[in-house]
Image (cartoon, rainbow, N blue to C red; front, side, top):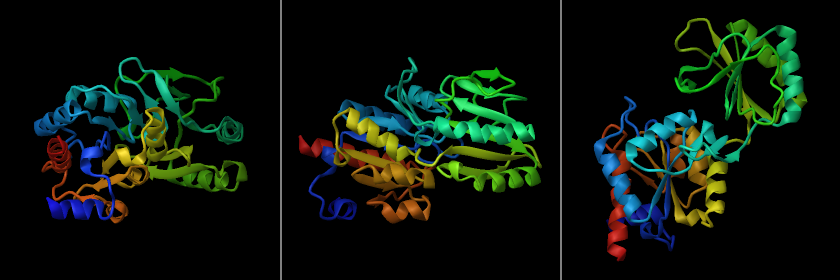
Length: 292
């Protein structure tokens, strides 16, 4: 264990016993690749809770996905969803933090949408607005999400978390290039990709570039009067980088992307199929017991 601590903390004075909160990714970290929660993971998460360590889930997917994961763990805690765009309490749905697309950029964006009669879906905390059909990438779909059909831009424009435009590849590529020339829109991230379910369909995803898991983590820590040194973060993919940077202790899964492994204090010896997150949970639990 001494070598592990040396690798994990180096010259840091704080130890695993000081951790009060763990921020965890879901897919590929908490869940295995089949989207399942291992019974052992649940057991150790509950033991951590009894030891005074809160587990907060952070996902790139919708709030409901993380709420289901919390139910499976038997825990309750704020949920970070849509890569930090929204922090919400489970059950009540109370919004603790929101990071939407700035309202002043909505009008010029929708001018392009109206000019080209584009199929759109807008994600908001209340549900998704759409003009033709509720069309989102599969990883952002959930059966419990509310949908509202609208022919025009919704009146409330201060809570747009993400906007998806749909079309064929040539059209989406052309639109992407045109929007990128508008300097007013450079504060937002634009990503294009093909649908996994429907050949030929492409999406243009729009979200604020300052929205990430790390900002949401910092908000939660500040609200609880905690410091980064009180927190650990664990994940496996690029959207977890900012989350780990916001935490004092950074843990990457064994099969994490290089960007995460490069900044990690500790890399688990197991992946999500083998219980990599349990490996770290056990380390924290042992440190807590030894500190008594």
